[in-house]
Image (cartoon, rainbow, N blue to C red; front, side, top):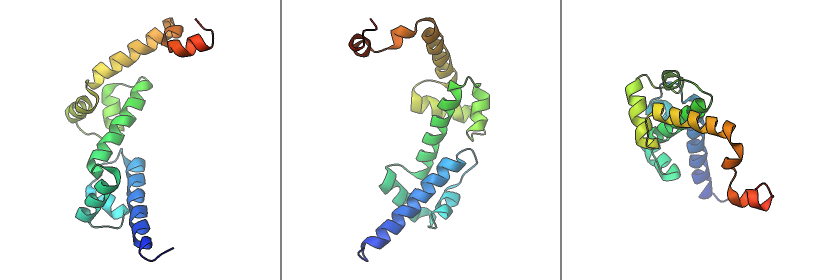
Length: 140
């Protein structure tokens, strides 16, 4: 391995380590300094490197992870307030506002739509099979 490539791999490894830290600790109150510490880097240098690598800041990535985890919890039938606190938000208002901004609907609207879709799936499961797939395998 060439000497000039080694520092880049080392830096990339630290950035990935920080991403994995976010993935593992998303429900805790995380500060950029905590995440930068996981990458053994200064805060401002780390933010720049993380954004270069993943296309978003560590905070944006953290919010994305939290919302994705919230959607998974909604799929289990959990309530909005429970999900809000389970994914690391202290304020229901900030959780709802961020969820609406990223998903296009409030958490309660999302949950209602999800429950309705599950109900429809139970009542008429064949209507959820894509027509091309159903036609190919003789379902319809």
